[in-house]
Length: 171
Image: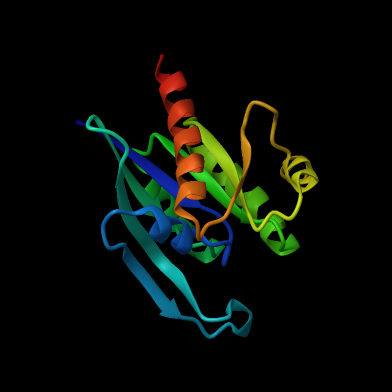
């Protein structure tokens, strides 16, 4: 059986924990804690999330979620060791999320040359995907996909798109 480690990263409060919980076949190991920042609106991940999904008899994805706050960037590097690809999850309805995603994309691209996709949570129109690509400075070869982080099938489509990119890079 082939194990594939992927990382789900993105800005604070983009929906990373929800993304992983919606698709994981195991109970997600999550280190969420209440934060004192009133803009957080509840709980947020301050260390990591871990989930797993079996794609086929031959492939299992191990999914690691990063904290979104830059002050935890030391965890980004640690969690990305050995990853074969990553998803940058962005809340498309939150302009600050999009701004923060630019720095996160740069960080991960500078650290690793593995394939990645951008997943836009809460997209209200297809035009929003093109605008997001432009704001992030993402070239056409990188997929920018709409996702509903609460919907298992939607999340699976993003993970499959990443998995296909990973397989292409290995050929």
